[in-house]
Image (tube, rainbow, N blue to C red):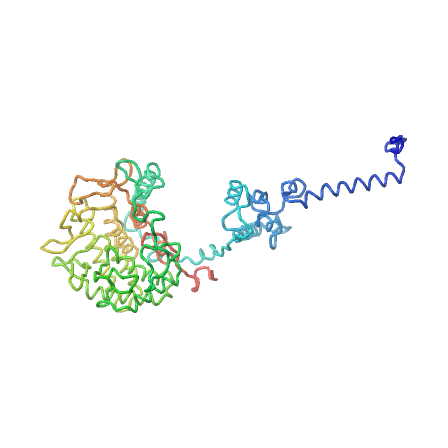
Length: 525
């Protein structure tokens, strides 16, 4: 009985269907096709199936991987980017226009998510979820590199013919030697101490140390203290807002200073000086350096930093500057009105600092400061030249008939410090006097002879002994600063031009903010 209720068709033709039956069958079939294929486009996680049926749209390489991540904001946005460009040049569109469109698409992608598609896809695969959660919107990135590049102004001084007084091949060979030293130092660190603070080249292992404290052991939060000063061991992630830095500067400018000098120790609680020890070397060096460099990095708009620097320099010149009986100019240390007639190696950066700031001094002071920079740098060179190794001690004195030499063993060590070659580099850039390259090459030769070991470079414990006793430490600043400044000393002026870049106290180049002044390419950032 059941079988009788089901129509049985005996085909009389290839279809075996009458016209009304054919219509109903095709209607059913079209509905089924619509339902099945519509699901491919409407259901979640269907992007992979879409690509099987849709022609590829314009998209960056690797975006299809991101699109596979369910619910990813970038995947949703990329399906309909603003003002999408054609995948291929339109009729009559030349290759240059096509490349411009590609650059615009890349720029849109970077602004949408600066992390990059490869990193996001990797994070998504490893976590098994979307790389970004909905509550974590992507951060816009507005830096325009092409505009910045158009504003670079170099060479700083001189021309590319600045090596005309000596064979090009010699300078190139010297530069390549320094490059080899950097590669050797880095490969040694990478092989024996990767992840540690420093390499110990004699024992071929790494050194961790506790200079920056132990995690979770009572670090100060990044608050402002009662005197609105940052605690010296505060959390750097929380204390770096520019306004807090401005507050510190304002406190320092208002506070009474002995003879206009800045002692090294200031109480973060009371805001008063803790003791009257003034030094342009250790503990005080970066303060003066950052005043003039803040002025330069701001494209000479930070007038407060400029004024504070020249006021401090005049106080140093009046109360700390001395000339030894042998004619060596040096900056002494000051302890409550009594001078210690010595300079630390760290203070030898000041020759370069004074040279760097000479251009913007009062007109009647410019020549004086250029000469002062050269004289201080010469004194620091003498501390090297008067040792057996031709490397300078940690501190050197001017008393009892002895000049520019350490007077005790505890000050006779050299730990690969950069300050002297830093001043050589700045003085070379300003004057192109070949003496600075000669002095720099003396340092390279001494480093190779007394500090190079089988597995890296090491400091030595006594610069007055021709038989080196290594301290078994390849300091990190040797790579970041000493070798970098040596390389720049033997490079042309347009390699990290001083008109475009400012080196912080660890020799990291930071760009000068040319945004408010016209550059080679015009326009603004």
